[in-house]
Image (cartoon, rainbow over the protein chains, first blue to last red):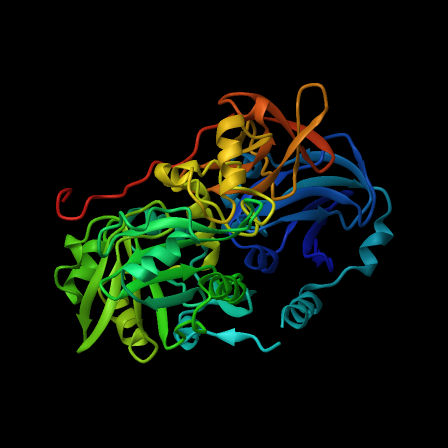
Length: 126
Length: 367
């Protein structure tokens, strides 16, 4: 069983074995509006917890995408680069951003569970 | 400072608007369907825009007023027909732009529509240049635009004969026993109308337009629509530091006025005769990268040659689009340029405006 965790920067992260799949939350897409551009990290590059690992842009503005964990990028989702509107349609499933080979599993401990994140999202957007 | 609300605020709220502060007003940036849907509804069907934050200045007078205004604006107002509108500027003595505006000559005088952020300053300037009685914006009236190909038929159902108006002409019409002034104009690149109507009646009008199938459109889509149409946003694409000639808006200066007297005339005449150093152009990135306002523009040799003043994703163009100023020698169509986005130089090229071809129609002729 893999539990989905959430960051304060509105990313979700799902871990299977030592590979984490990361994307942005439904709440984030609602805040951003129509997404028209996505930029992903390079496969094979190293990322550090809370560092930038991509960009999304809506019609209104650009926002950085952060990685909630450190490690090596093993895969990226080209389909969201080709058609960024997929991120609005299915953000927490098929429109994942990138996969990271975890360097330090304990980094997961500081992240929120679904209930905590929903509360956080509600409070910060009020 | 208190944030103001237009008389349509509750209607916006009840229709799921997200609000943003704009020029001291709480304005809808989008409704629940989002900017792209709203943009496309305006291009293919009909959209309603609350532009009541803009200034409406009604000046009464005859030939003497025309004469006085002729000394303030670079437009040949004497040649205007009654009910004809023109895009013009309130200019600084040095040729910079205090505001861009629409002037309409009416049987009673002139109506001037001013940008929300500039309106009170404009009023002071116009007043001092007229050297007459004190002026006041009419804040008893709201301003609503209805834009897009279906707007003509929708509005005609409520306002008889409105579809006979020619582009950039206006007239008085009746709505629920009230006289309202409507012009065939707008700022989206689509056929449409701008309706000046009392604050008391504006909700009735908008509700009727919604019942007939038009849609509420926020400032977000207004921005993507006007940018695709190559139209300037004051405070971004034009300001006190840019002249109409640099902004590539020479067409809005009446030819026979160039050698006459109005604020900024000398600078404009010089720039027409001797050329300008910078020019507003359309810009398209080669990739999907969006270059926003303030993005620096470089040439092949890494010299900065200008900057972006507006940039977004164009939903109808289906690509990123931008406008900005470049040194004159780089302003030719298809010139290769580079935009600095997030530290990287991305290739782009200069292109003609508009990005999206206009659908203006000539009233009763083009049905």
